Length: 270
Figure 1 (cartoon, rainbow, N blue to C red):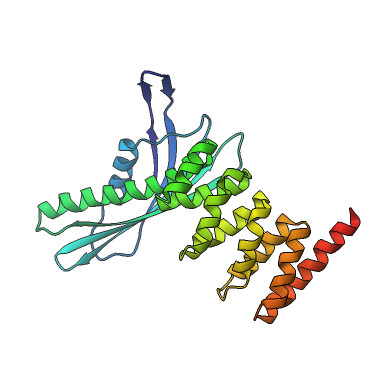
Figure 2 (cartoon, one colour):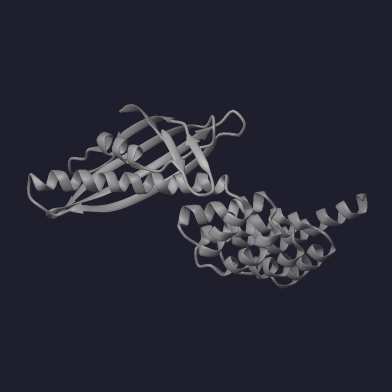
């Protein structure tokens, strides 16, 4: 199902500023996902977009792919909504943001069940779009707002995006927060924090990354070694030498030694 929806029209005034928000044209594709029950996917998507506080940069064009499925669980219905938001702009590269939600739509007999399922589907789509839109907001937020999201750690989509943005902007003020998240039990958080620290290039991250390179975790030690090499310098070589001497994995030992040779050659060429 293909839809086109206009949102965001009007003006907002407060004590400090007056802003005019021009209408945003959404290109929308709605898809019925796997499910065992009726789902008002198209209607719910339109209502969710019209009622949401969605704002985009001037000239931005959002494309939304929505997948909704309703599954009957006894007398109840669970709604699963997933969205992929692609934003194109004349001045920025195309960017993808994703969101997902599960809502219990209600447990009632017809005709009340129809209203409950409709309302639950709207809530699920609204929450999923909200997750994706939060990630877009982080991309255009100030450095202070990015730090605030890093400190809060929620919502998840915005938090993960804030880690990436902090690395891309090389925000040294974010280093203490990113180092804290190296101990997270969430592998997505750890991997993003490692990559961000490598891009920021602060030597304070070298030893914590070295300890992470010795951890018995899938993928993380390789990412930590690369981040150490990205930071570079004499201290990075010394940390890599420690990893090569202490690592239990022959693969990690070989990778650390290769990076030591590469960094050493780079210093000789300078």
